[in-house]
Amino acid sequence: MVFWRKKKVENQEGSQLDKSADKSLENNGNKPNGPTPSDDADAEQVSWYRRALAKTNEWLRTDIRDLWKSEGQLVDDQFLSDLYATLVRTDMGGMTASKIRDSISNTYRSRKIEFADVLSVVREQVKESLKSKNASLRTADQGPTVILVVGVNGSGKTTSIAKLANRLTQQGNRVLLGAGDTFRAAAVEQLKIWSERIGCDIVLGEHGSDPGSVVYKTVQRAVAESYDVCILDTAGRLQTQSNLMQQLEKMKRIIQKQIEGAPHEVLLVLDATAGQNAISQAKGFSEAAGCTGIVLAKMDGTAKGGVIVPIAEQFGLPVKFIGIGEKLDDISEFDPDGFAEALF
Ligand SMILES: Nc1nc2c(ncn2[C@@H]2O[C@H](COP(=O)(O)OP(=O)(O)OP(=O)(O)O)[C@@H](O)[C@H]2O)c(=O)[nH]1
Ligand SMILES: [Mg+2]
Image (tube, rainbow, N blue to C red; front, top):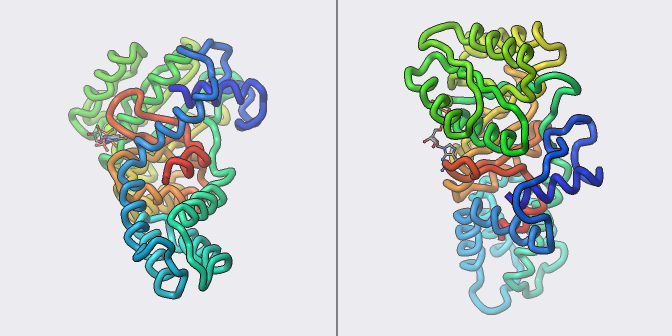
């Protein structure tokens, strides 16, 4: 994906990416596939996001345009209140929506405003809200990087793991998957099929067995056989199920015992179509399971893509990746500017 290739070059120049990750998986010396970045890269990046945000984009454009009764719309109380309601319907959150409303009120009150002017204020405010909310994957200085993936049932964990594993494999990393969802009968098979398609290795857990033992075996093999990355799948659970949250803690302890400082990432996969519910999941999981970052899956399936704004703003948890489909390529690092440009 061109977007990633662009990021990789930026990383090599040391300009934008997380400097804490010495041995960045982004920067492992492998040649990117395909063409090198060019002026087209930005356009392609925005167009990738446009695809992701097609529904939100259409919704917003139509709804905001509907506020125009004539060519130039007078900015009065009614217009400001309607605009606010439209923005809130994208799930971008009251805080960002009111900043946009206030900014328009301050500059345009009692004057006429064009559609394009509103879009430009929205875009700038969304960029501002998301500024410095992105971060690249944290990696181990030495030995395997361990990524534990958690979330509620059906949020997109296993699919996101496959996409991530595919991406990292293509970048030249040796990836080992751990099928730690021993709860759902078909879960192990699902990840096994993905691993075969990607061409990476996997440690299988038996249905009904202790997920902790799969985690143990996977990390042990990752260390013994010098894998670069080890990604562990877990069964879906609710953030309110304290016994299942404790099980995650136990998995983390098992990992820590084998590799100091691991897991390097505990990624929470959220379903973007869950709207406000995704926000309470982010809160519950980040408190209970010590998550380090978010993968926002299913951005292609929602008209409420604005939900990324409160999620990124409120939890001090960076959105690391967004998923926009069921295919292996349908994942991208989260880029706030590209996102905001594509929103309109
Ligand atoms: N459109 C779309 N569908 C997705 C995306 N990510 C996952 N899905 C679909 O969502 C469904 C659930 O995905 P899984 O990856 O199995 O979710 P999970 O969190 O592992 O589910 P459990 O293991 O049952 O908790 C599947 O049908 C996926 O194909 C995405 O980014 N976009
Ligand atoms: Mg799963």
